[in-house]
Image (cartoon, rainbow, N blue to C red; front, side, top):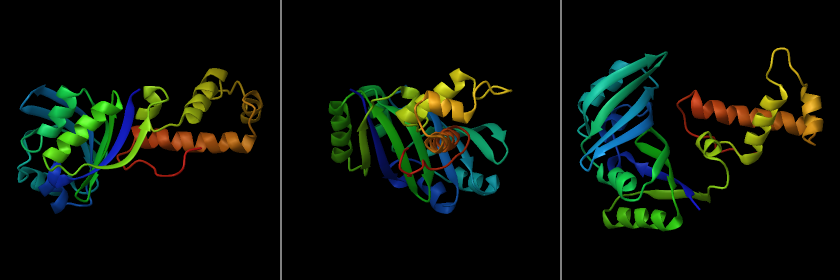
Length: 223
């Protein structure tokens, strides 16, 4: 069974150490990573948090990236593509050698928080051994088996939250006009209206945080 591991990594061992030191209030979130060959890894990432000019000044002096290109700009965030020049061996190893997938990578104040999916525990062990042998500080914070659909994991939803949102969609709760009220939906799901409302609240919050904002994942207890 595949496992989801959450790590904390100092920027010195991963990416953008100079940039995150120079502008610690900046938030950087990797959208996806493309590994094109053994010595070339290209991340796409969103940046937000302050005037972009301050970030770009620090970015140009950061030796961990090169060939930087701005791809898109929306509100106060910008999407960049770059090529890592340092500390890429860890990600290449994770992608190419053991087939791991980065589900989430967010950085702020010289620290990265990563959520990575491994096909099984043995591959996670291989990754940890590789980091130990190469003096890479990947601190494991949480480990759990993937017991729910990939969409739930990627969007930070519990199984119950996902089931509730999908059921509400199928029953017409989100239609205009509504085809079912919250009270009726709660009865059909054998829940109190208060419990359903709380599950909606936490599910919507986690879904929005994972898709529409650049921020750290919520640490609240799932409902």
